[in-house]
Every structure is written in C-alpha cells, then in structure tokens.
Picture 1 (tube, helix red, strand yellow):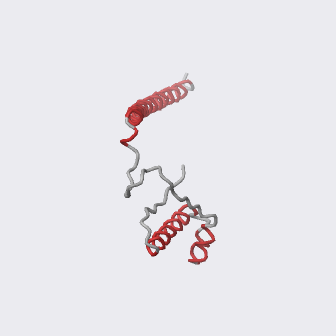
Picture 2 (tube, rainbow, N blue to C red):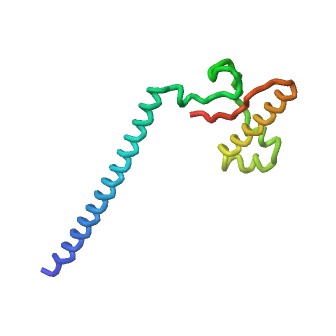
Picture 3 (cartoon, rainbow, N blue to C red):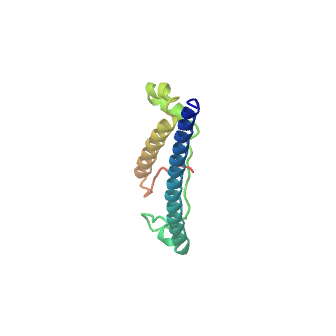
Length: 128
C-alpha cells in the first residue's frame, strides 16, 4: 500500500506539468495567431495601395528605372588585404565582414561617381 503512494505523487506531478505545458503552448498559439492576423491586415493594405510602400527615390527618375547592380565575388579576400584581423576573424563572423566590405565598397563607388560629377544614389541592399 505504501509503495503505490509515491507512484501516485509522480503521476500527479506529471499531470500538473503537462497541464502547465499545454497552457503555455495555448498562450503562445493565441499570440502567434494575433500576430499573423495583424500581418495579413498589413499585407492586404499594401496590396490595395501598392504605391504607398514603394520607396521613393531622391532624383527625378522613377523608382524602377535603369540601374547598375554590383556583386562582389571575393569580399573575404578584399577584407583580408585591408586588415590582418579580417583573415583571422572571417571564419567566426563572415556575415559581419561581408557587410563591412560592402559598406566600404559603397563609400568608394559613391566617391568615385562624385569625382566624375555623377549624381547617384548608392546603397547596400541585403539579399532575401
């Protein structure tokens, strides 16, 4: 008779734990569904008025006019040439090193275009 008592306690503890876990998951589900509903509403608003979220340009050209795209094929090698630390830390933080190289390249391209008298908008865009 006394041997069954600890087993009943364990069953009760496990039952309480399972109920708490189920309640937590239900609360998370409610929060996620609310966020999904909010995002769907925002998306429907964007679809109804697409011009409201298209980025404006600084010049007189339309936002989807002709443009030049540059992709650096060797950003890690460029970083290693500029800094001895980039070669060592490149394996630990490659995304950060690439981002810094692209930002530096944008500054260089912007300066070169200004030297030629070109009015240009130079920006770094991250891929999807």
